[in-house]
Image (cartoon, rainbow, N blue to C red; front, side, top):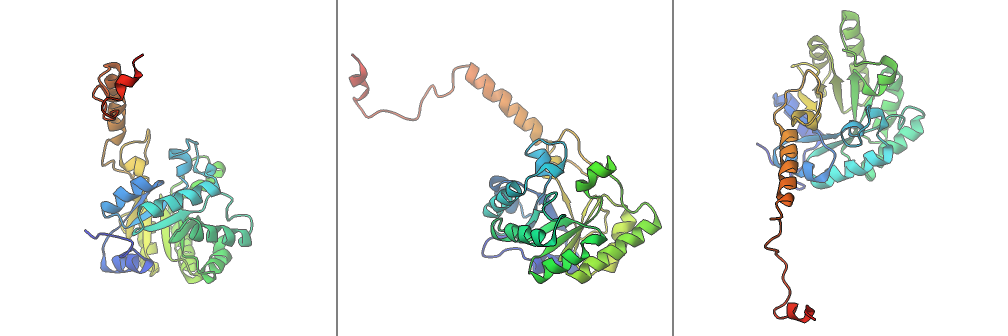
Length: 281
């Protein structure tokens, strides 16, 4: 397993070589420095600071409620915790949709203030011009195709991408166009396996799946889903831990310890010898 450090960091070139060599690119969401440090030690090469933070960190029902300044700050925190990992900042709802100039400015903030190695934005064909401008500005972009959670208010429910041959062809054309405009990588969410397979075969840049099918060069899931901390998880997630139950058990043990009055019975901080007698009388 590779060890990624500030002196030996993961770069876009690293990820492209991994894809070319058939090495799976493991990506996880991350929102804080401490967790980032442990994931880095675990050999995870890329961390996505997703707008899912609006749900799992802030408690909102939808990811669209993650504020821009908040996202930039936690992106910087993740990079400080894992300076060797490739950290991707997720541009939140309305940080890039209204105006290209504002979008470029906000992407720049992710790169400068957030210390991000790349940004991710949810796209359709209307964002091709913006993709070209971001590429010319020197901003590496992960173009997010397929199901786009920021459109939840329009669809009402998550939608599987690529149910028909026509939809698959449309997504393949979009993927190729995004690559031509300068996208550094692609992310395909909640798609049929055939969709991902066709996209991977049509482009030369790495494709990361989020429920996107086995053909993808790598996959990303929400860390809390992977750790068994979420009340509900997508069908494509396999929980590899039961951290939620462990946190609950630790909380119960802490309450029990305090109720026993045994905590700090042997207190580690002592007064200097003879000083306690001066408190008497």
